[in-house]
Image (cartoon, rainbow, N blue to C red; front, side, top):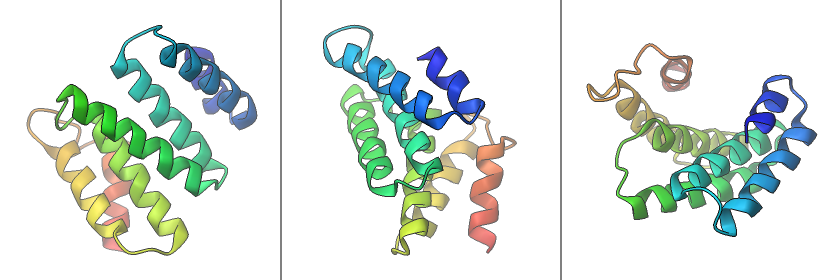
Length: 131
């Protein structure tokens, strides 16, 4: 998954998708933990979102949230990222619910247990809510 993350950061989205898909296939065949699988799905969703494939992105965010719920993970950075990603998908698709998603994600980022209110992700949510 690390190579996929590096490819994403270098904006080689095609390579990132390939690496994340390979990692996901390995996770689905019993390699790694369910939490790692959820993270991989989050990265896949984020990558699809970057190249404006919002339907695929939304599917990956939903699957990741389902896994996190099954694990009883609660309010985690990963769940906040998925909810924020879903908000971005809704916004790009012109559908209702984006504001609610950004509010939920921001609440998680700003929670005392996470203390992530100063992150770029939290700031993105704030800007989305403002305008």
